[in-house]
Length: 466
Image 1 (cartoon, rainbow, N blue to C red):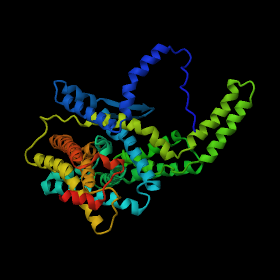
Image 2 (cartoon, rainbow, N blue to C red):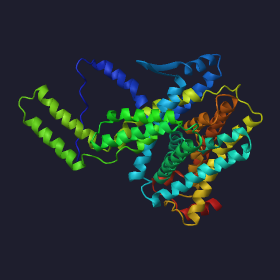
Image 3 (cartoon, rainbow, N blue to C red):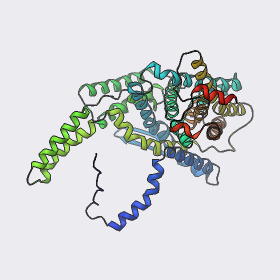
Image 4 (cartoon, one colour):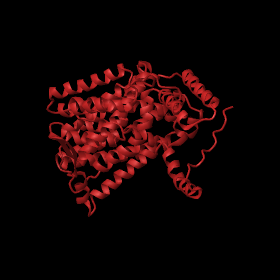
């Protein structure tokens, strides 16, 4: 049996009562962060704060904050943008980098590893993208607002997974895996849509610069460079190239994420042998001095770092920063819709309805109908234990758009009433889809399903008919 790890001793100079008070104060926060839905709750809170702030007597300060100039000067070169740019085009690069890591991992050894495993989420994602886009165009065909057709196509993975987490034992593991794989495929679709349809004034020089950055990444990998910080410079070149090329620079994160290695350097056996060898040397040393300890610690640090693949390590490190930092900050910067600036006349009303109905109705319909239809004709296989009810709730959760939908809205429309109305449509559609996924999930799914007493597809449909 594995031995329990003893509680670490307090660092020198620490005052025990102060540490106990700090631990008690942080315990509720740690419990909250351990809950799967916590990042979605943080997003919701920040979105609500932004909306309230933008419609308060302090609205001027809200807008002034995001227009604060921020940049740097190096010799004769200077680059300055407002704070809103650095959030949407800078920090969101980290978000898209994590998305790229997720896609890379899933394609390498996840739900997208084989066509058989990817078929169901692929069909569901395609339906969940096409139907909302068609619904939006049905409301906006022939008008300038039709440019926003990509807005209701996106799923916010943090909110969606959080919505399922609120259903507890009603959600079997296969259902959660389906939603995660669907969301990853949905992100791929959104990235393609942004690159092809929301990039303007493409400049060949920028693509050359991007190619130079990508070549530098491959060159560093060929030399065996494994430390993450080494790739910051070529990653910055890819980002700058995207900015010059007219492609949204945040997509540079996806490019670099997809280039991240997926193989470990130290296998499990080698890692254990390395640790055992250094521990044996340390035990044999008598007496053990600090300077003698350093080489062993350096070698153990390499073993620790390389026992997992760069994809897994970077995702583990960056996910909390994205979930609790980048995405909430993006929500604070973009969810502040001044209600007085939104318009519900003409194109404004069409855009609002297209986005809201596309998310709350189009996404669930698209996911359910295409996945169910593909299963009936034998193109995909629905995992055992997942019924039509599960597919329906997954579709409703997929209608939670928020982060990616607002991001696409900022690309589709220039600042003004139409953009604010589209954002309000995102907030409305997302809220409706979130509430519906919870209500329908509570009413339609049985708590026993997640514990192993799952019904077969035929039994579930028979009970549906009754």
